Length: 312
Length: 78
Ligand SMILES: [Fe+2]
Ligand SMILES: [Fe+2]
Image 1 (cartoon, rainbow over the protein chains, first blue to last red):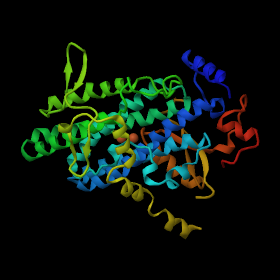
Image 2 (cartoon, rainbow over the protein chains, first blue to last red):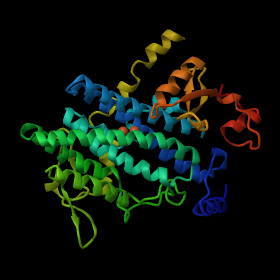
Image 3 (cartoon, rainbow over the protein chains, first blue to last red):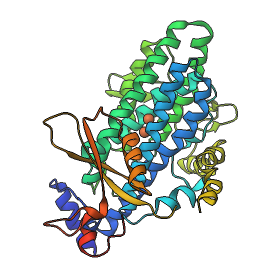
Image 4 (cartoon, rainbow over the protein chains, first blue to last red):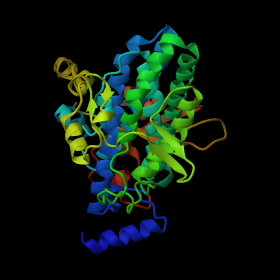
């Protein structure tokens, strides 16, 4: 299809047009939404093993149950996004079982181990909140009808995950002593991790078409600000230190560390002292994947071969 | 896995409300489709939920989209 068809579609979308089926997509639109949905599906899928391994640290049966309820939600969210891709002729089977672990498109944050209960609840407070910022924006703005409807359920459940994170962060913060110290250590590595998750700043952003086709409404920097506008006050209210503050004059949140910068995944430590690095260096780190990448992918699909062979 | 079909999921929240299309699941048969739908779409306390094999939906005025494939003779989804 021609460039003219792409421009015509963008023009109709600007006027509020909603697409209802893959047949109505131009090649450019199709490419862009496939990338968006793959990232979305992979992120949901990889959050499940990350949370699952961490749920072992639940302090009681009740908390074990709520942690697993969240994991079940994430698997359903992944399934819904992969199912939408199937309707566009992309094989869920191939995406889940046919790729190398490093080929998944989830953010680097879900390649990291969550080693204790505090890390799991801060993941709910930070990562799930990032999910709400990103998917809530898609829900409000997307020009693809089936995705808009699918996100009703997802948004509702992500809000529950976030609440779980906030309630537990508050409890740990009030406890003081070792609990609060542990919570602060989580915030120290997970805050910058989520900031980086939102990707390239707008002034460096290559043109992706996601905004033109109205697959989302806010830019990376706007989403990063949105995330900080609820995360920073939450942490400050709990007496936790975060490397960002609100700048009254600029009327926006400002980071207090070199961004982007290098990360040591073994030590779970950001190398603020080494100064700013290039985004190319960040992409190289992302592409190299983090310490849990293979284990997480493996844990999602390890029994498939065996069980299928019994059934066939 | 072979033999998976798509099932459309419909539900209503309470008496008096319309049955809405809320999503879809892949399943190898009707019984598992019921289970997958109930477990996947558990965000509400549904008053009523049902599943319909995608191939059983007959579009009336449009022949594009997933259901239109049935009219175009491409339906392979259940
Ligand atoms: Fe999710
Ligand atoms: Fe979540």
